[in-house]
Length: 101
Length: 507
Image (cartoon, rainbow over all chains, first blue to last red; front, side, top):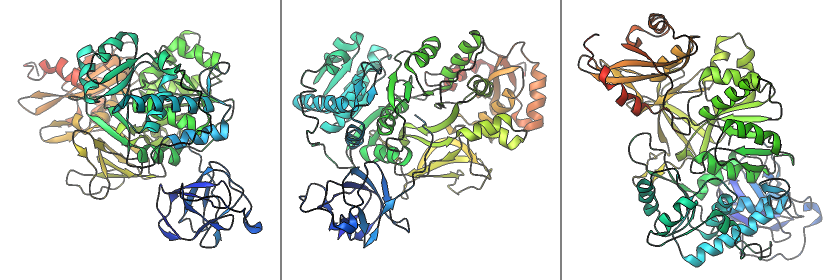
């Protein structure tokens, strides 16, 4: 379990994925590649993503849960896919804004 | 959170794309990352409190911005055009510093205690930079509350205050408004706003995160702007109203041929004269126009009027849709807006009051005064205005500029909007001038479009659209109105210049 709050950063222990929390609060079982994620800089990569969680993450994409209470931004890409409390996090459709500056 | 996170992602995702400069000799994102590392080493070795920049736009600026974030000290851009005494007074407030300075300021700034000055060329060409492996681990601090940027606000009233922007505010703005790598490889943005303006800082961050090449125009000139757009293959640009006015005039002087290469043109920083934006829509017939409203204290844009609304307004016969061209559109997704009256009560659609904003990008803090956010995180913008039935935000000027005549508050903006709707008026300013009878009276200054209109016609128009109390006591025709370089009308100057009309016995 990790504590989600905007700005918190987590790394995968099964691949090179790193994320920053854009939206989310409270204790969540956050996994990547089927293995628990830990605070960035506090863990080592050991093993590889499990077969059912090997969809990968893409740099700069946002990942969210179905009820839109969690949104993570991938700051490093990897081979594992993300899940929170057992539910897969999917790529959130970006809402493009026109450039303003 | 740290601004370096944005550049790290760009260097990873788009390492070989040009980040700033020309396609043939610009810095790539990976090179920019390496130079930022070199700059961070320089700042750390010097052990200074601030990264001061007092120079025209050049690649040294993004290097210093990201390098200061890496080193954990604030980036402090100063207005290099200030008179020497004013400049030194501001520079002293930044404490010990490495200061990038133009030639005229190198010695001046280097003479301050604890300050070492360096030219932009020497700073960018640091031989220590570039020797680090790209993979050098980012050892910047991730505390979101760390200071990122200190900006001296333009100070149209009184002495400049230093606005505090923390990493969390700027990162929140970028993540909330820019899609990572959202720009195509052929896109380039032309930055001509001053580097010590919030839009100058924000443009570096949003362009890097979007992956859009930055082309810098150090001294704005409409002819050079047009030529640079064509030479550099510029697709995006941000301008302030005075710049667009001059670009439109220059294009007309060249025969009025449309510019088709610019895909997106955003403007903000002050009130855009209606005739200018209307002419610009014709001269840039397929460009996406964006009107952005924001403040230094809100990490740049908080509300924007998008491309579709511009074209609808251009071609619509519906007065409501046409009127939207005078609005700043709708708030960004991460920003909330409220309009409140003098007692703090929240007002409904169409009701005029002070605009309050809240959101992750809203800093609302000054070094001198601390945080101005209330207990619930709302920031008073000091701008007056209203929100219409469809959520479009209309700004009617600074609350400090409100005219109080006989106890009645009136916004200069509403009087100016009516005056400018007269075909003989190119630009207008309404000011309050102290007088014995009313406390303040309304003086209207107009710039004529061709022959000056009859003042009685303007009086009738204002009486008809607004009410008789808004009818000016005096209408004066002037050659031009005083704006600062980011397009803010200097009402203070006008109030001084026309103070003599206050107790004019001929009334």
